Length: 267
Ligand code: HPA
Image 1 (tube, rainbow, N blue to C red):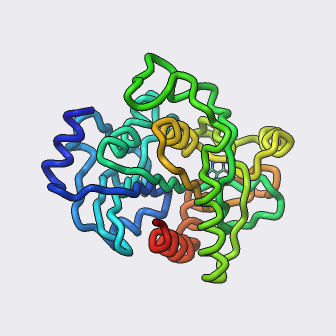
Image 2 (image 1 turned 30 degrees about the vertical axis):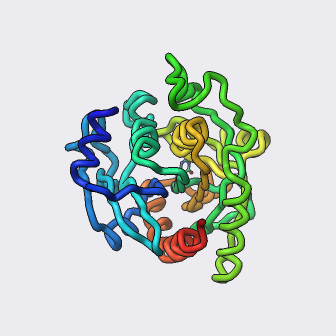
């Protein structure tokens, strides 16, 4: 970890990021638009390379709306075969770099039948259905406590800020519960029905490990899902990754506009 932090600092000098953003599928263009310093994951000690198409695999540092930002252009998924430790490692590194607020984005399937492709949902809470937890193992007391409270993982203040920004911009926004499953297979209709009965509004294959670790190490978390498709069974047609990417792409401008407004108004 210390090697990773030292290596990154050797590239970024005295740039101290205060806000981290994890960019999900199709949303990476924010990092292309604002890139000042890019550090490829392949060069950073302990980082692995992402295997998902559409994920670039680098940390991008930039000043955006007067804020110092580090963006993850591409993330590590559990379904790629990475251990949880690898999935959440960048969050711990961001913490060491000085990040206090973490914005986590993802592509998700709409479980709530009111949701349409390209809608945005602010995550108010999550259900960890991955069958594991990123904090399993010896606890690092310098980062957080052994049994961290999870009653407000997603900062209510940030949810309100996001809602206010969206309202001013005329962007309609859902709020809801995100359920994480491991993937990589999409859900069956029965699993989506289960997710709805259990209280989920959206399903996906990421975000929850990073949110657990971010909250554990005292970051303020904001989660935003791009609803890319109606989840299995809600829609009568089958689901493809290219359809998910296309929906994320068509929501991209709205998503970026919202994130920029949030960054501007964060204090
Ligand atoms: N399920 C799980 N993950 C997803 C989906 C989905 O329907 N869409 C985008 N990511």
